[in-house]
Image 1: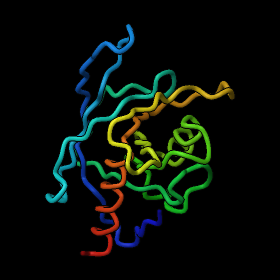
Image 2: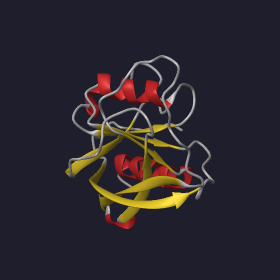
Image 3: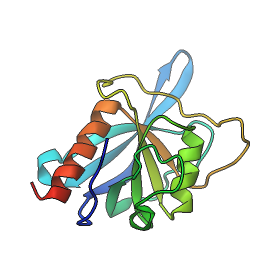
Length: 165
């Protein structure tokens, strides 16, 4: 999935912690919600799940912050658009390396948080538990898992906005 970022226009979103616990197989899970404010044609509240055992906690309300698709999308190494990730929230695609590795790459580029979208674009209901890998490394920024369908919508809109369409 190629994303053009030349114009510096991205989705503005507001992220706030809205935990809604539910019981699943005698285990408590929670959803977090974030709202895309602009562009208006996808003004929507998305549901995501936080990393299970790594990363920071969403305890800050982010207002008027940009959601920047990573380039390359899997964010498993150096980012071509790392300068644009600084102080923003990165949108990355699942695959290629561990969830923790992706989170650390975004953190190293100064991102405030990372949203990892499933690479199964037709996934509209199955949340993956993002867990620590075997490296014993840590990450300080929060990480969220987003369904593939929702991630695809966000990336497609980012491309349209950057192209001015």
